[in-house]
Image 1 (cartoon, rainbow, N blue to C red):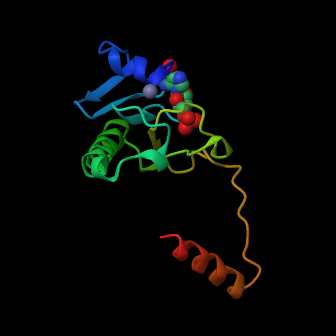
Image 2: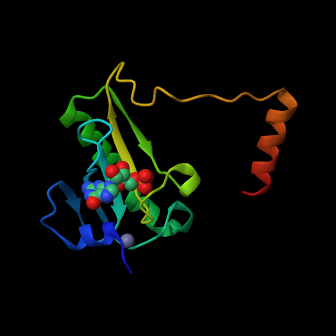
Length: 136
Ligand code: 5GP
Ligand code: ZN
């Protein structure tokens, strides 16, 4: 299978490599939204978050947190976004599951074009919550 992230995982000398263990690797994003923008990736190939085995989450998210704190300290950021684009409609472009850690600085305007939607009524909001609860 042709997968850029599987190739990076096999290549221990990758320029931006930050962390690796038998289950998780982390490296710098080649097109950073801010310098220090980091990806955290499971070694095992899963297309996206929908396919992530629950039993691998504990270790994976412990590493996401540890690496996010390191990115924040190293860059002197004021905070960070943790993002997992899931599916083409959500702007996923590499179909090997990964989390973005994006260091953020006050006023950096990285996501300045976000447009918020609005629920038309409390009833509509409640009905969304009920629909989601049914699928849990
Ligand atoms: P997605 O849009 O799928 O959530 O994010 C994929 C990310 O992978 C993008 O931010 C993109 O810049 C990054 N990326 C794509 N190809 C490479 C690569 O070859 N090396 C590295 N380090 N990052 C890559
Ligand atoms: Zn892969």
